[in-house]
Image (cartoon, rainbow, N blue to C red; front, side):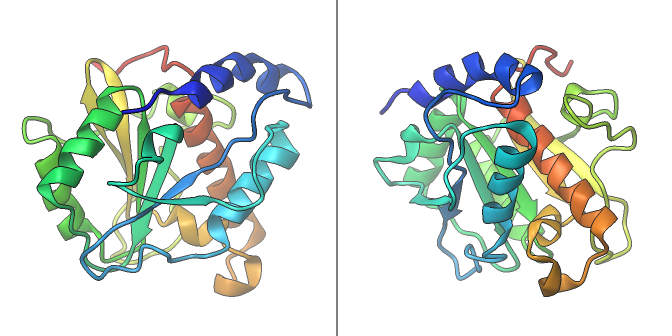
Length: 228
């Protein structure tokens, strides 16, 4: 299916992102996954705009102003190194879409799934269709995804209460690499939204944006420290 030209370019850019204010590369776009089942895949419409602005203004990445939108059976899927999936309701993927997503992830792609409260049950069913022989594992707090640029010694920040459970970062590991990172009881996307949408305090919004930046940069970094 396609190649990961953008991944190769952005891996080269990682050193520049960390060490200099500007990046010379193709513009990076997060691709929002449009899925079936009735869930609101389009939720938090300002979230990825703001995250990409943060990457651009705070870390010097060349990003597009708006996210891309892609379905799992879209031939353009393999043009994007980073996918984002969120929502409150039902998520359903077909057998064909599961096969394509597995090929995408095993071929070098990355998916961040962010439960916007209500996605968890159907997401766990869907991920088993994609990786029937893999379990979601909690990412330890000393992992680089929590320390690459911004420090999160207790794992992902808790942005909204929901069930009052602690925020978790879970992962699917394939060939020693995180291919899917799942933020649960966390709601980063709400924290990325315009301030007036949820009235989150500035400190929470900044924490959400910084965690989002860590996820993006870690996904594009070559993942130097695989999970055991």
